[in-house]
Length: 242
Image (cartoon, rainbow, N blue to C red; front, side, top):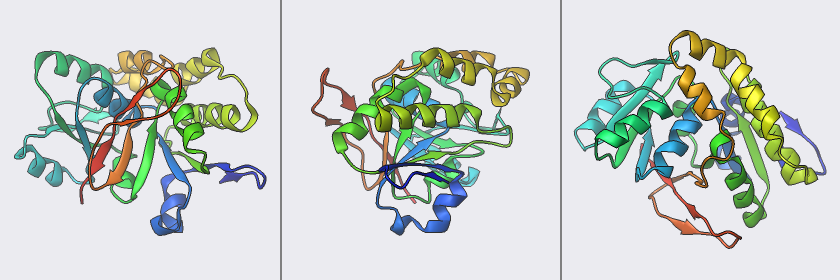
C-alpha cells in the first residue's frame, strides 16, 4: 500500500489488501481501477444506455441471471467464457448494443468481479472516465483509496491511471494523457490481449476521458444523480446483488 500520512488520498495495490482490512473498516471512498478491461467495460456499458451491471463471481450465478433478462459478459484469462453472450470487451459490447436492446448485464471477469461482489460500495475508474472520477472525488471532498487491481501480467496500466488521479487530486498536476495512452497501449496486459485477438479493445481503452460517466457500486439500488460542477454531468450507478 502506498500511503502518505499528510494526504487524504492513498493507493492500494491488489484487492486482497482491501479485503484483509474488512469492508466494514473502509471509511474512505474506494475507487476500483481495472483498466484492461473490467472497469472499461462497465464504464462503456453505463455510458451507452445500459441501466444496470451486476458483477458475479460464479458462472452459475450468471446463468441464473440470464433467466431474469440479463445479458452475460465475461472472460477467463482474457478469453470469452463458453455460453456467455459476449466477452469482457468494450468494443464487442458496443457492437452488441447496436444490434440489440440491452438494459442489464451480468459481468464475470478474472480479476475484478469477485472483489466487487465482496465490497459494499465503490466508484469504478478507467482511463475512459478518469476526469469524471476526479471531479466526483473533488465534489465529495472525502478521503479516497485508489485500488489498483492489476493482473498476472502486471499493474502498469492501472497504476498509471491511479497515479494520474492521485497527483491531480493531491498536487494539482495536469493529467498527462499522452503518457497514460502509452502506458495502456504498451503494457504487458495490452501485449497479451493483442496476441489473443483483442487489440481493438486496447486501442479503444487508450482513449483518455472518452466518457463523462461515473459508475457507483453500492448495495441496494441504481439511480442517476446530478453533481454541482461545471459543466454538469450525470453519474450512472451500478448495483450488485448477493
